[in-house]
Image 1 (cartoon, one colour):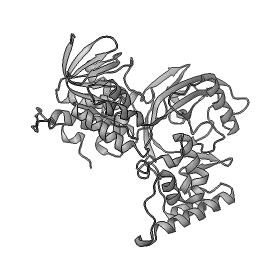
Image 2: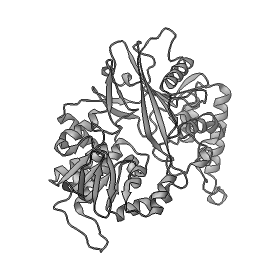
Image 3: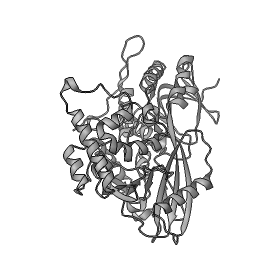
Image 4: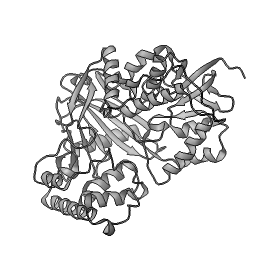
Length: 470
C-alpha cells in the first residue's frame, strides 16, 4: 500500500461543521486537509441557479443564539463581500381552509369556532394536569405522542401537532422519544398566551427563530463560501472517502488517493462513516442499522406572479396535502427570482430509499398548491426542479441514545471524532454546526487523553472569543 501523503488533521466533509473546523485550525497555524466528495463546498448548505432563479437545497435561515458565533459569521461574510438582511419571521399554518399565524398552539383565532373551542378546552385541561401537586402528577410521558397531548391537550394535538409531525417523521408519534423537541424547537405557550391567541391577540414572536438573517444575494451558499474563502488552500474537492483503516490511520478515496492522518474529524452521516471504517467491532457496525432518519424531496418552482402570499413559509398539517411545508424564498430577497416572479420551495418527507418519480412529485406539488389556492389556473410555471435530500432529519426514536453512545465511544477509541448534524446524529441548526466545528478543532489542538492515560499538548488553544458564551 502506497500512502501518498501524511496529514496531521484530516477533515471529511466541507459542510459548515467541516469548514469551521478547518478555519479554526488554519487560524492556529495547524496542519490540516479537508476532503469533500462534491465539486463544491457547503454540503446541504448550498445554492443552485437555473433560468434566473437561485434556490437552496431546502429551507435554510441564519438565526443565532450565541453572540460570538454571530460576530464571527458577520465578520467573515463582510470580508467576503456578502451582505446580510435581517428579517422578522412571517410564518403561517394552512388548515381547515384558512391561514393562521405560527405557532398554531398560540394562534388559533380564525379557525372554525368548534376547532378553537376544542383546542382551548384541551389546553386548559392539560395545563391543569401539569399544575397539579407533585404527588398527584402523572408519570413521565413514555413517548413523543404522549408528551404532545400532555403539553398541548387533545385538541391542539388532533388538529395540528399529531398530523403534522406524523407527516414529517413518517411514523406514529408513539415511536419517537421525548428528548428532541420539547425544548428549543417546539414553543410551549402559557395559558394566557393560548387564550390571547384564541381571541385574536397574535403571538408572533415565540420559538427559536422569530428573527433571522439571509444573504441579500447568492442564496444561502454565501454562508459556507465565507468560510471556504478563508481555507481554500486546504480544501480538496471531488474526493469521496471509500474506506478508513482505523489501525493504520489511512483513508482511501474513490480516485485511488490514500492519506495517512494523525487525527480525524468526520462530518459525514455516521451510518456511512461506520460502515466504511475497518477495524471497528462487528457489533458496532451492525448497530448503525438501528439509526433512523427521513429523506426529503424538495420541489422548486418558479411562478410568473410577483407575490403569491406575504409569508416566508407555511406549514401544512393535513394529510390531503403531500407536503409538510412550502417556502417562498423570494419573500426573503427579490434577488433569487427574475422580476415579476416568485420562487416556491415545496418540501415532502418520505422513507429513505424510496424511489422518487420526479414528474409525479412535481405534479403532486402543483396540484396541492392549487388546492390550497396558492396557485391560480392562469399562473405560468417557468422553472421546475427536484432536489433529493437522502439524509434530511434524524429520528429521535427510543433506541437512538443507546446506539449512538456505543457507536461514538467506538469511534473515539479509533481516534475518530464524528461531528455535525449527521455526524453527531442530532437535530441542530447551522449555528450549531459552526460551533461543533470550532469545538472539534479546539479539542484536536488541545489534544485528548489517549489509551495510556497521557495527555498530548498542542501549541496553542483557540482564542477565547470563538467559544466564550456571553
